[in-house]
Amino acid sequence: MHYGIEIVPLGPYSDPRSVLELAVAAEEAGWQGVWLWDHLLFPYGAGDPWISLAAVATATKKLKLCTGISPLPRYRPHLLARLLTGLDLLSQGRVIFGTGLGVSRDFIPFGETGSDKTRAEMADEGLDFLAALLSGKKFCHQGKFYTADDVHLIPIPVQRPHIPVWIGGESRAAMRRAARWDGWIMNTIDEQQNITKTPAKIAEDLAYILEHRSSSSPFDVAVDGISNPDDYSLVGEYEDAKATWWFESIFAMRGSHEKMLGRIRAGPPG
Image (cartoon, rainbow, N blue to C red; front, side):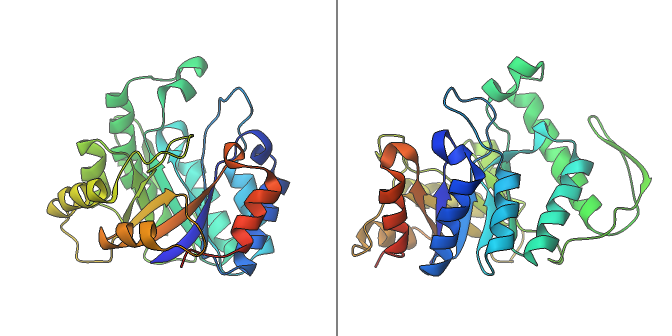
């Protein structure tokens, strides 16, 4: 099991400086990654994950940097490719691209599609398009949503053959999409810290994913949750369900900034 912190960049954590303080403390305490949400519209503010992760990249040496999740349909893939490449170069190969469809409330007010079906089509075409852009090879594509005419993006990311892609979502379609890539990233708690996706459910859904997976390469399963530093029992249940990453959920409704720093400094559970 690997251990990271999930920072919900809403309210006070929409400020990159607060995120940076948490991340630096996490690396010093032995955590291995940081996962940031990517939303636009919240009444108490939503921070930009890319700015925060770039700041974390410059202030740390080992933390993996993960978006969880950045909706691919919100981005133009060629600009996203440049963004991911820049962050991977800056961090020297520590980026994980967590992606999915996003939620309609972040799309509709800006005149973008609220259709899950359309966004799913955009994500599937966009993921292949993005992978080709990041390959370092010349590329042509004429699809339903995206076009490339003999393009060649350079520089390329540090990580080869590609930046790991983790897919978020609990629908059957999302899980089949995850099976095509490198991992599955899932929330398992709500704002009140209630467990919404038990270890048994993770195991059941993972079995479905693996049924649809054709690759024999390693596959990550990342979950979030709330733990005590001296109690491994809950984390152990998720590990038994074949989760490979535990991300300690850090958010303003859980407690004060000082309390969150205290939890991080206490280190991973167990």
